Amino acid sequence: MEYIHIVNGNRAGGVMRQALEHAGRTERVVILRDDLAIGPLREIDDDPRQRAAFWQRVAPMLKRDFSLDLTRELDTLRELAGESNQVAIWHGDSAADQLMLRRVAFHLRTCPARLNEVALKAADLDAGLAADAPTALAMYPESVIAARLRLIAPISVLRIGRLALEWRALKHAETQIRRWQHNTFEGGTFADVDETLMALLPETAISTSQAIAAATQAMRGFFATDTFLLWRYRELQAAGRLALRGDPYDPSTCELTRL
Image 1 (cartoon, rainbow, N blue to C red):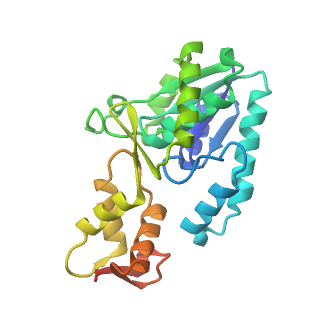
Image 2: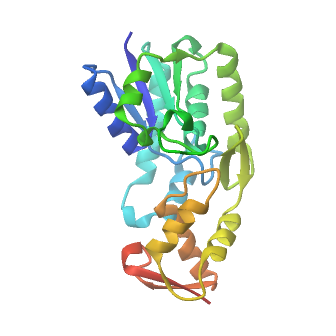
């Protein structure tokens, strides 16, 4: 049976395509790039402009047309709902992946017989991770992905309905961050992240790259990207809580100092 494989993020897309190629399979890979763990979701399935404006604020240095990118992503999901191929959603145990799973289930809820999944856990990695450590497809060796190609499993109608309902609720929750912990979502705010970032800063100046590396390890419940953390450091500077010296959009040329 042939599938359309849906994955979260460019790195996951590259890993998936490589695994399919080495398995001699030419199936389509759909890459959804939006990090759903952070930012507003309320209008994401109707009008992406609010979310595009959020990403433009977070990452202007990427020089992307976020409105166009997010509109295309929404169009892709709508088009998938109108097709007839089987769909396989690949997801790890992380907030962004779990949110992607729910969003796809929401969009394809009217054709449940087409929906399948591959759920990847920390136990599938030979990396000494804790059982509740977050995981994403790009973390797995090709051998694991190749083995899972033979174990794609259908999602029950009951579960699809539950996932779609959860997506609706998550979209309308008044939260800025979504953490996936103990198999459930917990809401958070950017202020929560900011307090963690400030607590990690030493009394002396530190390179932004070092600060980001420490913060990435400290965050729980979602993968905090360099782009997101650098934005929060700029916001903390605007609030008068720290000073950034160097290019505030390039962590390799910048350092942080408490105020």
